[in-house]
Length: 129
Image (tube, rainbow, N blue to C red; front, side, top):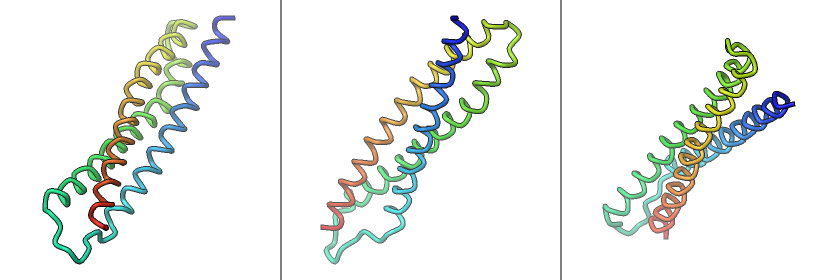
């Protein structure tokens, strides 16, 4: 009974990593689109605003890539650790605990990516209007 619950937890974590990796990739794509469009209006903007936009946008893409990598590695190696471990049902327990720790790290990177994305949007709005 406990093994079935742990396998369901493993499946739930895989689904969460899939969702988080997909939405991080989507945000990174939006960020790339924002940085590739010219953002300077006719007025001479302050250099600090341009620098803030570029720094926040670059940070958003970098943090997004970290989040995508963590999600991909956990989806690839987590179930394999559960299936091929040498401890039997203890391997499933170890895989779930490890994936839960990595999920907590990944959710922090995802929240940081969202935060820097909104900061980037703020700077883009100031630059355009």
